[in-house]
Length: 416
Ligand SMILES: *Cc1c(COP(=O)(O)O)cnc(C)c1O
Image (cartoon, rainbow, N blue to C red; front, side, top):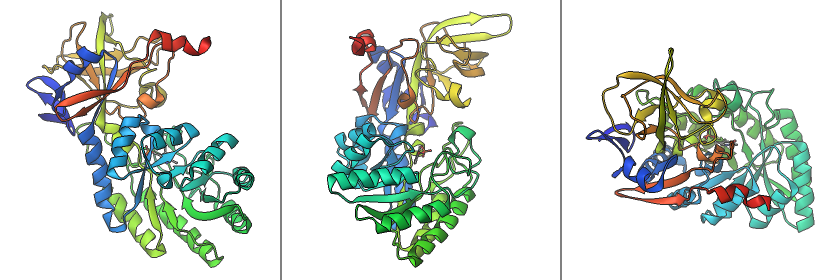
């Protein structure tokens, strides 16, 4: 196979995901369709595990990147925990068999019912994002007669040099708190019978490719942990968040997990803390493709449009972040045209790629949009009343549907 991304590539002019032809899956399941490679997910997970094995971290998969229960199950088998941001994600993680003691609960707007749900299940810790939330967690814990394990999410104030929508560690951000507020919150938690400070958390952004940003942040947070120690507050978990970037272009190399390990390990060793990582994109991003059918070729005086059956409701990243996703024909061939690939949605932003080199294609043929395993299906919506696509997991020479395509009846089922 001529790999485009690991375990996905062309063989004798046909796109394969591991040992299965993309076309075979599409003919059986229909399009648009998300397809994930089990081996690619496993390999990406193991790369991180291997790089950090010296400190045996908890790898808490960021469920928001891909929350399919079968994907979570496979990660659970690899030993992963879960980083969640809602009761829904906790519910998914537990359904997949992930032990509550490996589940983290983050997010700036946790509702009372969600806090109760998490406390009842006995999760590892709450990553607390404001003083108000700390009081709310205390109140709920008191009502339930429980002790809530907490970490404060702090803002190390480093610039992650990524898209502003996914930069989260800056002073101006809605996430986390400044160090002064964090100290106050830890003091408060220490005094409370219903709160137990167990960790510290930072997550500076997503799709980060400059490792020095992680070093700077870890350095700053380490100093804060020392300060807490001097005040008699012992931190057990050093949660360095997610954010490790991937290569969206097949000809670029991703930043290595080893480099991230070298940036983080010395700090956690010095502190004698257990490291927690929250990778999402890095594990599933390049393990998924969105398969879509060419509905119409439309030639205008300026452009050749390939109008496909996937839209921004199925894969939002290009329209939301102007994100680049590599696109290829499922049947390979000489790249003779420059086509602009657009979806059927009634928005000009419904655009997957501008002037891409592709083969001459006929209506009814298939295209693959790469790096769609993270923030793909999880961000899909029913905009334009389009049923959300199916999801398929390829395992060696076989594949199975892990989420059925929605039906028209599904669209209105809650309206009666
Ligand atoms: C989104 C998010 C992650 C995962 O980010 P990736 O870039 O997918 O690794 C991890 N932790 C928190 C708190 C997040 O919000």
